[in-house]
Length: 349
Ligand SMILES: Nc1ncnc2c1ncn2[C@@H]1O[C@H](COP(=O)(O)OP(=O)(O)OP(=O)(O)O)[C@@H](O)[C@H]1O
Ligand SMILES: [Mg+2]
Image 1 (tube, helix red, strand yellow):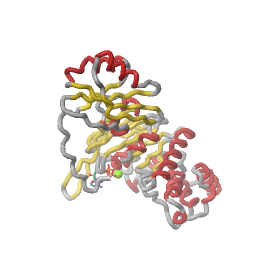
Image 2: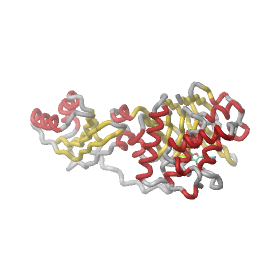
Image 3: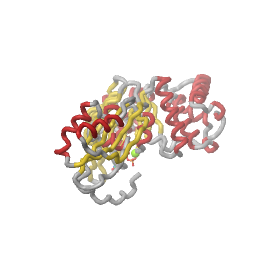
Image 4: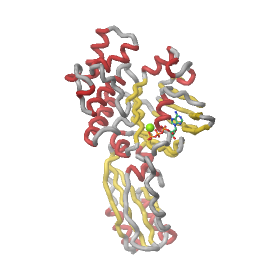
């Protein structure tokens, strides 16, 4: 549904060049919710702004719903009619809502419909229908200043849906909201994704957002995608940084010369009997350092961190045994002393 290939963006200012995107290949399938995460400055907003051509990429292509947007002429306010039309089919939701305070809720939702040239009756009908869809039918005549943050974001979402988009882009749309409101907005996005078959590309720095609604995710670092896949694939990828952040399991080894192993199991599988079998079969003492169950991408996942006596080389056979049981096993690299915690980054979110 959304494909970028070799997307780069180089900003030039005062004779200096800065590469905000260094060749991004992104593939978002139709009907999925896709999350892009990464630290501040990683290039997430630049990426999403390039996807709807609010920002013209330096090189590479962006295809949305089969149409190559980069081939359409114009930029910014001088976008060609074709590009405008294509863009009206891509909804965009912003962190700070971007509502016009002098217009009523209904008039805010009608704004893109005015630009599309719809007649007043038709605009009114559409706006009220959308406000109903986002649960704000009774606020049509209010002004944005009279709404809570969550309600404002619902208006932002209704407005984004005005052009009957197939694709919704969201840049940190819940970052200004409290946790409970965040949940209700995410639920709304999920419902719209299911009801309208809407493809959603969202940018976030909150892992919880990915955990709650994303089917797939990508991790961005310094203008590049360093990991991507469905949430299930990521969780099944040994050493995946995203998986570790989506589902952290802690626990420090009790001493030197130990092998620490993270065991992941999906759905029904339980590790408990496997661990006791392992202990019996190889006559070793196993300590459980940490364990957790969680729902990630709608699936029950469990993770357990266990400790085996001896170095890795001495545990190749027991680890092989765990893998044979169909469990995902990652050997945690904890024998090297952990580096001193890095000082918190200035301005990091
Ligand atoms: N118009 C611009 N001119 C020059 N540099 C820019 C411009 N816009 C963004 N950048 C730089 O590009 C990099 C990526 O910015 P971007 O806004 O995409 O990051 P981000 O991942 O969205 O960060 P955040 O999580 O803080 O929103 C940053 O280093 C930023 O300073
Ligand atoms: Mg940003």
